[in-house]
Image 1 (tube, rainbow, N blue to C red):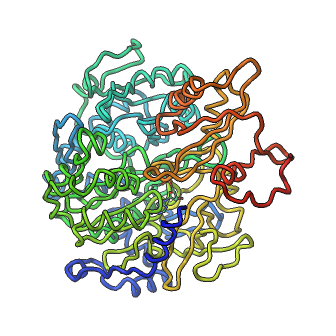
Image 2: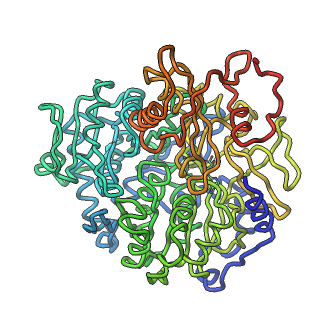
Image 3: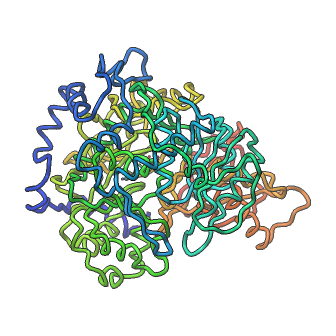
Length: 634
Ligand code: WT7
């Protein structure tokens, strides 16, 4: 961290933004402290009351079952399908004619779909899935661009009790193949292509290449977005529109159990193999519904824009499930934030009179570089709240976002959470006084504590590990197919507590300041990547014998990937080979993992047991002290 940045953070701690009176006047929750106290004293009652706001086929017998820790269960005995709450129940109200999604393509094409129309598409696609042999509990991999059919596919799976596994459309062959194999998906849903930053992403081609490595896929459904020619395997591949033509729009929603699996979502950890976090219908629904309602205070007249990708947890929770359960109108935009010009987002916000914008600090930092004249071209007066997610937001970006996007009127909800947590964990509410760069305080019913190596709470303003003390309904239930790894990764380091993998500080006012990951996980432009995944992509190239990857601070992206490579005998390091290796990583993993730099070395710092000491590489690259080297081999 640069010195200036540290000064900024220290001063931000003293800089407090009280909530504007009009925001307080309309806020659903006016007294945060009182409700926090109630939820802390009566967590099960608090969550049961929230669950009552949704519709159950059969009410639960027990709110929380903690008899088999850490495999907690919520709303045990309840019969509940999230799709009944996201769509079916709105069909009996005026809301069926409300717009669910307003969509804009990067090519400026537009679509709007009402709740009733969305329901009809979901019913039809659910019948398509059944006709392809998909049954309750089966995994279906979804690999699509940002089109309305992506939520349609997810909801159709959930409706029939199948388990979706969405793979972000920016991932490439190896990442997709690994996830198909691990989840044992026989059906893959994709697009012919997608438009991002003016370029065509060949999703179908990547899918075809992935299936060569994962030949268990029997059926592929292809949504036509671009119309460019694609390869075709007769019998295996089917056009979305052809299957939908004759599909019946009538489909009963499966009466699932509250604890039945809803989806798996892969995320990076400290090994080369991503983890499939499993979320269930009941608890996840109650948690995402409630967090969105209280944190963003959503009302019927809102136009909500979560600018994430549906392929990440942010999109699952706050583009698809929570907005639909809350009956909100959402904006969805297909392409890049600065395409064709740096005011593309601000044009969209103005055009659709967006009232709440929720995005990542990396996007803010990227757009900030172009200067305030770009947002100033647009009338952003419809905005009333802003949000931030994915990585710490530096005070400078916070202030720019607040001043130039929010016009100084809109509080920023800096929400800290993870794929594993399902929804917001540490977050402001509209009535919370804000400090730029702090996610403020734990949500209702969440007990968070920052501790040292031994699990003892650290004093105010000291850095430590962020842990969560009690269960919450939105927590992932396990790692699909690997419950031992679930226990080891999250529950073994501090018995009885959930270990987040993040470090943090709590200041004298009880405000949490997230510092960053303490494991071998990197946040690059808000995307979560494992250094081990990048290393294994590098060693899959014939020239590479060994590789190490680290993250170094980057002004816009938060972190940039730097790699150190030992070549096999017979290969000579050159700028051309370095470039080839960068492209190789982008090809096998996806462009988001493309290293900033490939450096050729003859040795790597290792422990005597052969583990690469990435901390030493990082210290060397930054010119910092190398710390304790007693375990270093040479
Ligand atoms: C990691 C989780 C949560 C949805 C998107 C990311 C970092 C997330 C914040 C924030 C500081 C944040 C943490 C966390 N992170 N939100 N508001 N302030 N850091 O989900 O890909 O599972 O990544 O993102 O390091 O552990 P994810």
